[in-house]
Image (cartoon, rainbow, N blue to C red; front, side, top):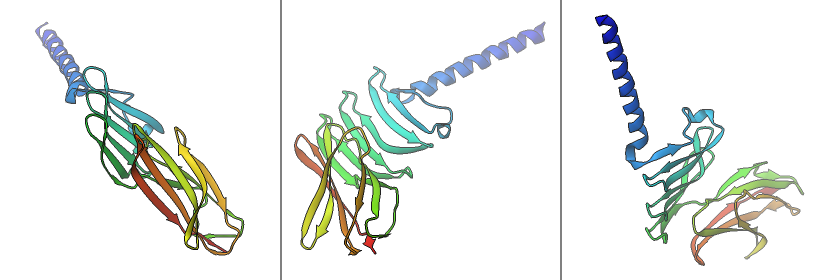
Length: 208
């Protein structure tokens, strides 16, 4: 009887310990998690959010195949954006924007443009298109616009303008003239009408 009572006491202590451990896990750093999988790598595409104690969002991050991908956002307790991080397909941080507590732009660093090529090649046949998608960060309180074209002699010929919203734009361009081409993609990010980022990427395909 005494042995049975001891076993019951040990079981109750174990249950109490597990309950306390669980509670500590989700109350640390004054936040709780939502959609947190036991194994992130088991999720092909998932979003993980954390919250302040009052229920307001503290951070939100997208994971693809266990790695951060695209835009990760953090917020101040007042709801204004704190930081915006931009990750490429390898989970590498390539761009960051920091905001003041009132939500105004503070500083940025890195490259806000990432490409997914359908037919990445330095050499193309005449008329063969170069196909790619352009990924840019979803910077809060800002808009993103792409300018795509080609440098011809001493001038830049813009062939396409694109306003990035909640989608990933896809482009396909072909070249008729043989030789090397200077193809450019300009990413401009504006906040309240002021340019906070102006980034240019050059592609130099050679047409046979």
